Image (tube, rainbow, N blue to C red):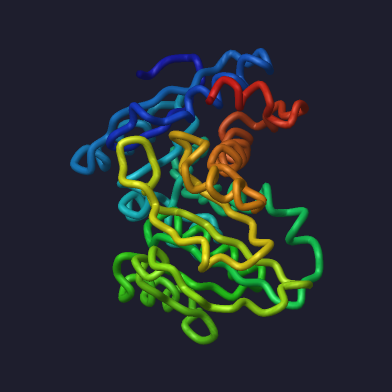
Length: 287
């Protein structure tokens, strides 16, 4: 794939479902840039050889990284950005002029982007209920801890949830729970939430096309919560639809996807992507 035309790409296994090429190529077209963004199926066995080959390709600007490589790729990189180092996961690799491969994590910034206005306000208390303990959850947990939020981390394995919090030095004052706990109704009476910010985040693939639904009973969700589902296929998940029917504000997975892509795009191509329309046209393409 060596050539004179600069390119970046997304790698993973599987990779056919990735919306990243549509996002980046849309922005490149809008800017009139002579560059491209591809997708490349890379298995775990092929990862080291893939990176060694691309490091020698002067046209290759870098890649975005999807499952299952976000943590496995780290030993193959020259160095990590401090954010990626803290999170312990990489979703963006940039090739420097000398062939060095630098790992970044843009998931954290992309996740927080649609919450910035709310988080800029002053709150008496902030709590996030996070469903899932995978690679995406690591970036989200790290970003919310920086926002001074108390976390409830729920997964199929309570031990894995507890270990993740411990990785971030956040064992005290935070909580873990089995994901199944939230599927059963509760008669818990929430106290006055005025002045509080409550966030509920689904980081699991549950609710994705071809996956079982996310089973959450809304009696566990405080009034006034923001419901955030990072699933992108479909962007309108059953969880978000049910939340809106109950009057909750919602954020869909395309918000995080586009937000993290914007940070990566600037690292690859050296210019901010065109987002003057609030991503309206791009969202129509992706939907």
